[in-house]
Amino acid sequence: MMHVIAFVGSSGAGKTTLMEQLISLFKDRGLRVSTVKHSHHTVEIDHQGKDTWRMKKAGSFEVVLVSDSEMSLQRTFERNSHMSVHEVIAQMYEGVDWVFVEGFKSSDLLKVEVIRPKEVLMNPFFLSDDFVVAVAYSEATDFPVTTSLPVLPLDNAEIIANWLIAHQDRFVYSPSMS
Image (cartoon, rainbow, N blue to C red; front, side, top):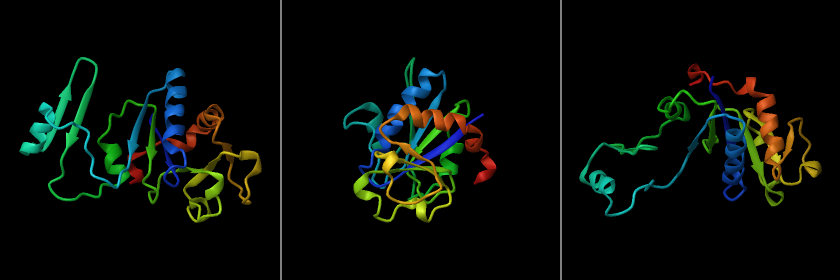
């Protein structure tokens, strides 16, 4: 059963660092995690001169690099594509326990908003987005905004991991969500 949670917040808030820590903690618990990162920039995974880079530049629609331990798929859209997060998840391996999504802040996925103290009063998502189910804040005991949402300590990924797992039934993903 796949569970999906998105982590949203401003650039530099600590989303990637938190996700790295959570991935490690979940893996230590025997859980398999996949990740999705939304980018507003051109994605360049390969390096100039490598065989797969050359195949992509020659016009290959998809380039798959396979070794004994990994597989990497690159797909080039023939025209700009604005895939929904649900379309992206549909492309992923279904045999994972969790998918952590970074970005896609306007999606209908349930989200944890990552906020740093200097940003808390600068138009946070949780005030207007009903899909935000918790806030991860560096000063969890001193959150300056009144909210009924759980405020989790950003600097303690173990507590956030425990909270996600304790509430995992909320995050069960159904493809019909799209």
